[in-house]
Length: 251
Image (cartoon, rainbow, N blue to C red; front, top):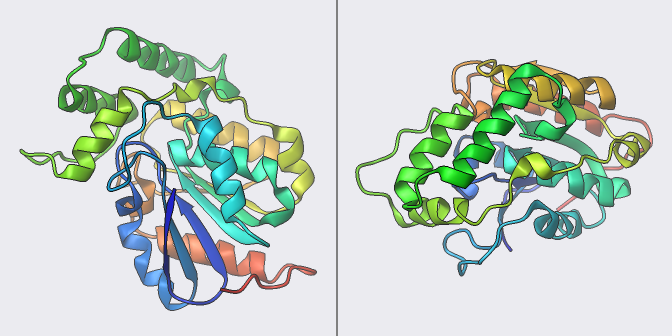
């Protein structure tokens, strides 16, 4: 795992999801004027060496260690599931947790939309195209991403497409609500208001974790690119910083 560090101030560890690495957080870089951004590149993602398997259970301990003595934790999509698992491992080091459309579909089993997405993901893994770009296009449609692929994939997207083929299905993740609730840190759940399956997951997380909730339409699954995301995130982070007994985790 590689970490790029920008700015100074309270620390925010940002964990990307599938396909793209820290490019995921391009629109959050201006926050480095007031915060220390620690942009994670997960194992296997460009320009790190490729890996033969992508697994949320393997990445969660790495993210948990990155929290150090304390940091805010923000994760998108697959990285949101990793962040939930990392926070449960080291709740004492989490100043706050923000997850953006984490596809923790297991928590919403029984909801028709969530069940249907699980079925689509399983079908894609079993019978989908095995050529990386074709598989990536099918995957993006499945999750409702607004990303438009260029005619020729740049190296980071080519690698991301290849990693999709060896990625463990995120619907297999079991979210440990007990340790997350016991951590007593504030949680923000963000959805893009575009897919009932993601809404169902976010509804469960909001209820089970007593989380704040933001619905930010306009960017599909990549809600961190939607208008108002940075403002909503920063309000939440500042409120977390003002909580009694929570010293600022500096750079």
